[in-house]
Amino acid sequence: MALMSDVCVIPDRIIIAVTGEDATTFLQGLVTNGPPTQGGCLSALLTPQGKILFEFTLIKSDDGYVLAAHSDASEALIKRLKLYRLRAKVGIEASPKLKLLSDNRIAEAEFNAELNSSYHERRIHAGVPQWGSDFGSNEVFPMDVNFDLLNGIDYKKGCFVGQEVASRMKRKGDARKRTLIAKFDGEAPEKGAAVTAGDSTLGTIMSGVDGAALALIRLDRWSAARDDGREILAGIRPITLTTPTYMDSE
Image (cartoon, rainbow, N blue to C red; front, side, top):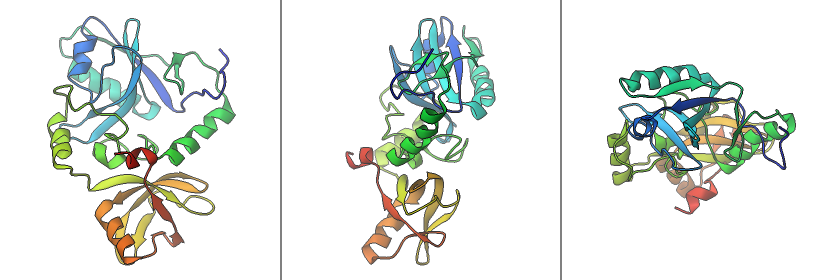
């Protein structure tokens, strides 16, 4: 099918079908958000210690659900889902011919190089980190990458893997780190470059494009640097840190 308007294939995503009579209850006890009764939602599978193992878009389908996960994570995610399946009547299978579109549709879609290349630029300018580009398994808590602010966690849905830790951090308001947008002139600093202000290390650069990058930042150190009027650098380059608009509304 041809893609219409600015709808594009989300790059590097594999579709995993979860079907069967126990699919809903199976996912209900595992994932941070959903399963949805219709449409799709951002969701994740956490470690028991509350860190993100995998993030994905979870979408209702005619015969169950589909998880659109990063292609580099698909094999490990399928293995983990089958580990949790036990005696549940659930089928778990990758569907490599299907693609995730940017309007949360699943289809056998054509690849549009121009539209797809703009996807990462748009998400970085919007302040949206993603697994594979910005973080990997067991590296960050959901709050570190704004997953709670992006509606990736339903704190009222009941138990899921890692729920106790995630809920405790929510109750305590314990967001020591957040993902912010770094702005600068020219090409993005190297991924992993230290963000500093004087002698203080604020965090690190994540993925970037010309003029903007995502940065994982200690909020208390950023606040102190602003109060003191210290210049903020990524490596040796001056940058300006800003909050994503969805964070400002909180």
